[in-house]
Length: 123
Image (cartoon, helix red, strand yellow):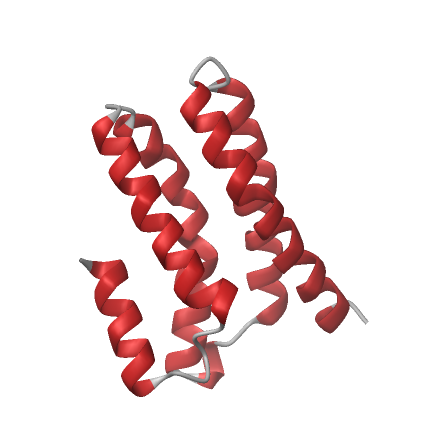
């Protein structure tokens, strides 16, 4: 429900932030991963990956109040949680082929986003 409402609210009020990959596609893929986690009964492991939402929280706080926007903190937490931590969890849970598959779908996107962040902020 959160992902669907985020897409609807984004389309109505923040469409300039809802990019095709980072907005709609990301949310739709995330919905399917959630459904897959429930159907296959791997949701307890999926919960471990929720730590990767920390950069999103930091970004949201910074969007709410510019005083709290810390781009370097966002980038560091993004790298630590969405790349290193995800690789670590995927390795530890490698016997669950669904987790490996989902990780192989999501990880390149995170690496691409981090690369783009690096180009923008690591000058």
